[in-house]
Amino acid sequence: MDSSKKLGVIFVVISALTFSTAGLFSKGVAAAPWDIIFWRGVFSAGFTLCWICHRQRLRENFLLMGISGLSVAVIGALGTSAFIAAFKLTSIANVSLIYAVVPLLAGVFAWVWMGERMTRHVVCGAVLALGGVAIIVSGSLGRASFRGDMLAFCMALALALMMVIYRKYPSTPGAGPSALSSLLLVPCAMLWGDPFSIPLHEILILSGFGLVFAVASVTLVEGAKHIPSGQAALLSTLEVPVAPILAFLVLSEVPGSRTVFGGALVLVAVLLSLRENK
Image 1: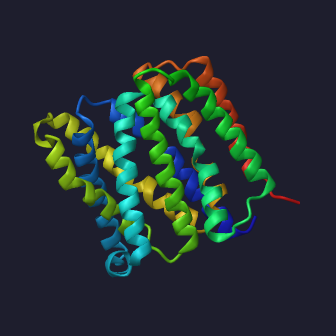
Image 2 (image 1 turned 90 degrees about the vertical axis):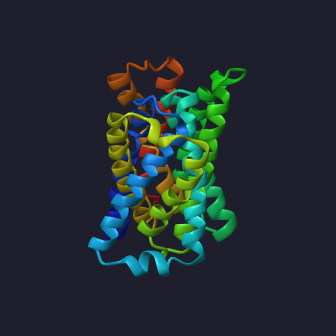
């Protein structure tokens, strides 16, 4: 594995580990989804803008983001709104495991759009990850949590498409579209939510959510530029076994046997994706 690919792997792994805390922030406050989206968006955009200004790349990240950057911002905004709402409707474990379908979607998108070959190891890993998701989602059929599962799937769809866009147009900046996606949701959250009514301590918690989201978003898109879309998406599912563990330790959310088995399958899939074809 060359240095560029190693860098890509490191960035995506960092993103996955930080992203795994999203459920804790969403369920750790009593605020409604749109209120969470508002404060997460404000702080995430603020932290990202500070980073952009520090790097002196304001023009590069915004004025030169192009159609691909605008597309990422819009898709990211739609995916984020679905993602936050999903945590309020279903378990952290379910959301995390459904997220594991991203490799399959990204691989298919890249194959159809770019003709990018899916390696044997990535294909096998994607099938295993999808199998883990199927085990978990089957338990939500006919229940209220099914709606949350479907919203989580929408997030997976959006993230897979974003990864392929960055792979197709690697010059697209990562920080600018990430900040813009957060800002696009602010007026919607003010219209459909009541963000200024939540207590100060929850706003402080959501400021941490904004920082974590900013770090996860930037490292993900930067990493996706250096490795194939399918592998980037599969590596990002490292959050799948981590998120339920954090949910148990912090929120006492006990994962069922299906969650444990599905998470094990996804972890095997991630390790399999790191192997190089001979």
